[in-house]
Image (cartoon, rainbow, N blue to C red; front, side, top):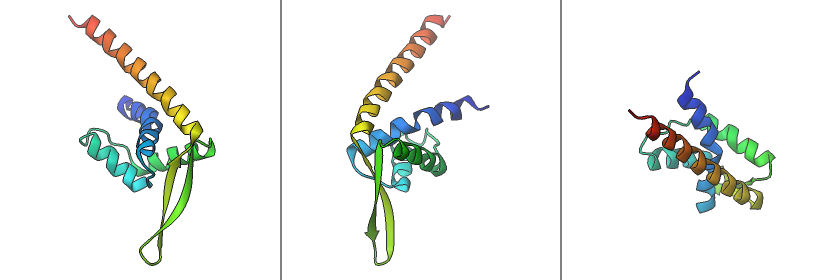
Length: 111
């Protein structure tokens, strides 16, 4: 098992909710935002993002709507809902506590 991918999968919801808090977005745009803002360091596939958005939608944390782009093409946008904002706060606190705790341990054990 690749530990890095496991960790990435665990933070995908946090990243999606963070992006949607800023503005409604569609999967490819979320994918590109993650790539751009991480400087290419986070390798999260569009399939992983789709899976996470389906889960978040089934939990009523986000909703979707279709928007016409061009003459005949529609795009599915996602919007963060109240439960998603609350989940984002919890996920953010958990992420900060976890990464700070891990960094404290690593720094303490450096020889």
